[in-house]
Length: 530
Image (cartoon, rainbow, N blue to C red; front, side, top):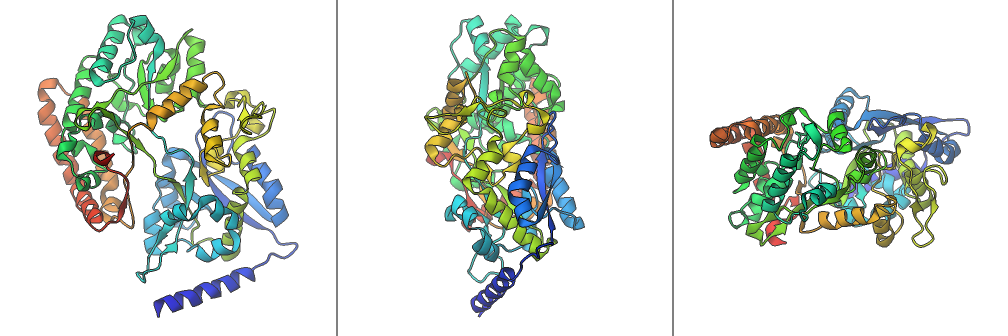
């Protein structure tokens, strides 16, 4: 009976949608959430990409596009507030917004009928496997509905570790292949004062939005997988500090701090201007971010380093071996789905149709190419005859303000540059970095070595909704305390910190994650099975 009713409702909606046509003189406004990363000279509310989309999509369809600026790092909170206040945009792409809560409350559009009628290009670009990430059986009738549109992640690589090749050369050392060799490099760099009086061998900071984001890249090397089951891995997916052996990873970080290798101010730093300055002035000898981060056009740390330190050279390093896994160097990688795109129920029917039409227009290859790459001769030099992709890509600093773009924040149905097939996409990862193609390629190879897909869950994890923020706050305090405490106090501080995290709501999260594993309501990979 419920299935029959669902079919009737879908038919009724389709009939209503197909009958919704704008009059010749009628215009509607489509508000689109757009991330702002504070790129100098780029106004995301009045940029080239907006003008291009308005001319080629908006004007022919009588749709006035309006890009609304959201700070990238504050976006989940801003979106939550706007959804609660009924002021959210008509299209909301989000990495950390309350998508599950919106599904539970039915506060967003159920999208099957809209996609079937107006989203054929979008559906073809995403594919059924990827669309499945946005489907849930909300009403329990055994049929999954499409509640959000998952962006297509073009490259799943996430972890990049970078070391100074010029420092290795100065020290007459080879690139480290394990933690002992890496530690020796850090100590030698400090002793030689290779960055001058401001030498910071190991750039390290706490990301308040996810304190364990960078840290587990190091501490996972110490986890004893002989004592970890797949269920444990899922249960502790948000609290990796509690895995067997991880404590020794934090002890190693504590040792580095007390030797002056990690900066005293690490707990105050969060990928801010001071960190960027240290990278380009040559003070740092190691850091971790995404695989192409040193060579990106918006903040090209490599080129800027060369300006200040002749011969300065960032290269990839892959040294965090896990002995319990036979020396594997674990790297977490993204799932195939990127950010989630929702249409709030506060958006009326005509505008919801316009929203899907816009996303569908974005999925057409020539439109995606323009939004991601800009203008030949301005944003890039030309098109490679071999690969059919742009070469000579200009950094944001070398493009006039009126042509500055950010591909992922505007063309958000693709997380990464898309050129039609895997071979072109792979070539494109390195080709824009003229002169550094080999460095970028090597970094991507390392980042996908012994890589495991991050754990995610199907359906609502209520404890994560209730306690996620307080747990992260407790983890930030824990990290600051265990890294900076006196060595003789480490065990005491570590154990007390773990108990505080558990009391802050982590225990409830762990219990629900474990239940989700037992019910099969999770996605992701277990490194013990690689």
